[in-house]
Image 1 (cartoon, one colour):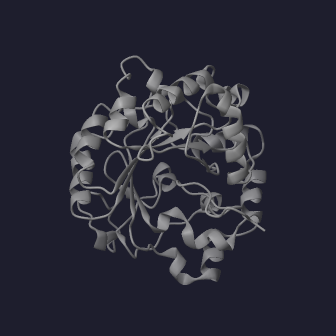
Image 2 (cartoon, one colour):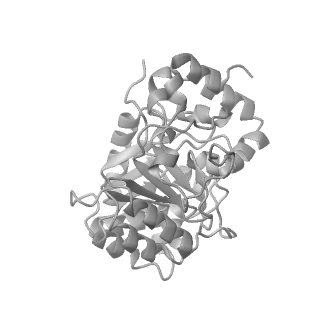
Image 3 (cartoon, rainbow, N blue to C red):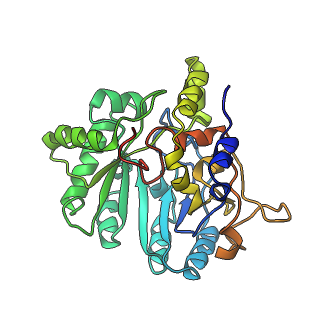
Length: 323
C-alpha cells in the first residue's frame, strides 16, 4: 500500500503532529446502543457492557470546572442509554461553553425515553443526529429495519420542542456514506436533504458529512466484500494537504468510558491511548490542560479518513469545496 500518513504530515509542517489549544472534550459514555450499524467504529450494540460510571463523570466535571471555555461533546454508543446521562449533563452544563450530544434519534422512540426532547430543550443541548440518507431504503439498509420511520418520528418530536426553529436549539443531521466511498459535497447534500425531508415536516439547521473510519465493524464490512484495500487506496489518493492543519485531534481530547484519554474517538476504539513523558497511560482524573496541549498525536493509517477530500471531523467537512 502506497503512502504513509506520518510522512505526509511531516512533509507539510512539523507542528501539525502536535496539539494546539484544547477546545473540545469528547466523552464516550459507553458502547451500549439500541442499534448495530454496519459503519459503527466502536462496535456498539445492545450487548455493550462498557458503561461510564458516575465517578468518571465526576472526574470529567472536575476537569471542566478548572478549564474555561471548553465545549463538551457527548457520544457513545447511544449516550442516552447510560443510566447517569441526565446527571452528567445537569452537572457538566455549569462548567462548559456548550454541550453537544450525538444521538441516533431512534432512542427517543424507546419505551421510557419520552422525557428526552424536553430534557434537551431545557438544558439547551445542541444535537448531532445520525441520518445517513434521506431515503427509507438506504437508512434501513445501513442502520436496521424500521430505523428511518423511527428517525422521522424522533425528528418531528424534536421540531415540536423547538429544535431547528428556535435559534438557541440547534439540530444538525449527520451523513456518512453507506459503503466504501467518500461523501459528496456537504452543501449540495444539505440542499438535497432539505428538499427530501420537507415532505415529512422535518426542519434542521445544518447537514454535516463524515468519512467512515476503516476500523472495527466498518473494516470488517469492507473486508467481507473484498473492498478494504481499495478503500484505503481511495483515502490515500484523496489526501488533502489543505485540511491537515484543521484535523479534530489538534484541539480535541477523547475520554473513554473508563476515563482513559485518547487523541480522538477512532484512536479510542483501537486502544491507542495518550501517554505521558514516562510512557504511562493518561487519564482524565490526573489530567490538566498543561498535560494535554502540545503533545504529539498518535497517527496510524486510519487517520487518512480525516484528511481525504474535503476533510472530515466530528463537526463535518473541513472545507466546503475541493479543487
